[in-house]
Length: 559
Image 1 (cartoon, rainbow, N blue to C red):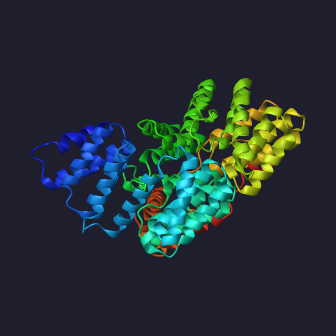
Image 2: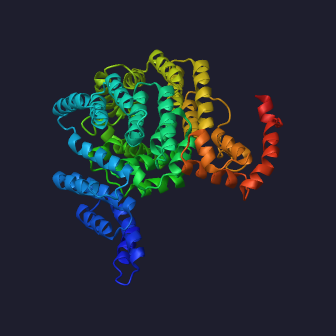
Image 3: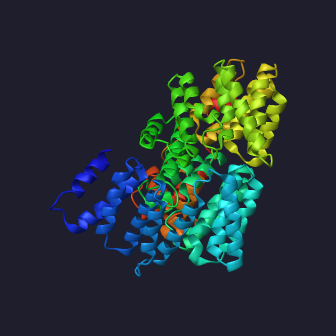
């Protein structure tokens, strides 16, 4: 890694100014922590950075990272000593006292490899915390039970535990960090229960907490995943563009491993770019993800978006069999228990059938049956199982039920895929009009997503049955001008034109400041303007031009 080598050389220069050595040592420590390649070298460099640090805030953060690394390397007792020493420091900021406590609770939680024992410990901790009135311990114990229930796919029980934890921390400014983390957990569970509006509300609440308590993270990666399934891809990309991969917030200040978030970041971005046929941007994200080898449990649980993005790139390169091979870890139900593999299994079944690989198609069905059987309340996995069966049994009635489910759930991306599959099932059965109706709706959704690859794939797939829906987009959506802006960006543009600052916009829209800044930069670039003042001056004409009806082309008139 060129940046690491360069930083190491500079930090080791004997004549380097002390302040420069301090700051660069800290930067090197954070990069090494994120890459997690050579634990001993990283520990040595983090220790060096701690010794050089002169600011309490930075020192506390480095001690947190140091303790987290010691714990992951099996030296938990030493990690606890590091945190105890830090908490004894009279200059320790209050926010870091809270984060240190959270890390200690994570140490006690362990890796949950023995879920029955972990559950017994967590329930005992709940009883103790209820008796002593320890809100922090009680919230963390319920969070552990949330994680265990999620692993068991008992999402309703998981929701009860996370909601109990939220009751405990609500209206406690000193517990804002865990409040924020719990809302992320709640969003995950609601997504699994196909309750997307409530998941969206959990995200809004988390952002409100972030703004109220000046927390540095705004759940950008979690938000991007949520927006991906809702079909809000422009907003997803804007969120991801604001993430500083070397920043401490990507790992929740050592409470989580940095690798999983980085894998999700590049996986989601590469997948959206791939669907949009922006192959250069997809390749850039795939290359950036290459430094993260998914070796830990958490990393394997978060690698699914990246695997699907890699498979899509292989398919676009004319190598569908390699694409299927890339996806093989998703078929292995023993690989990453927390991975939501069911969301990808219908696509794997589809690809396997197109290749005539019945064994792989049946493996996808078997994996989906396994996931659906584990789901205590039928939701996403049950819908995915019905979808897989529709594809393998060529059952249009089941395919229609899948479409109805995703339409009701508000899952825009899966709705488009299911409509495309249903179109083919109708076409096979000799119902071209119904096939055309499904294809038309799928293509319209793809057009709204700017998913040019999907538009072409769907059109080519149905053309084999002589089912067509007119011209498919062959050029990208406008990258410049008012039409290129997403609804959120248009709203931000209006607020900028009214003289609102980025912090004011962030507060009003409950967005992280970095996300607002990323949107403003893109707005000015798209409108070819050099300043916020120019935007305020030009906006009325831009909005007026948007409202003026455009003349229809001859082709549109014929249609």
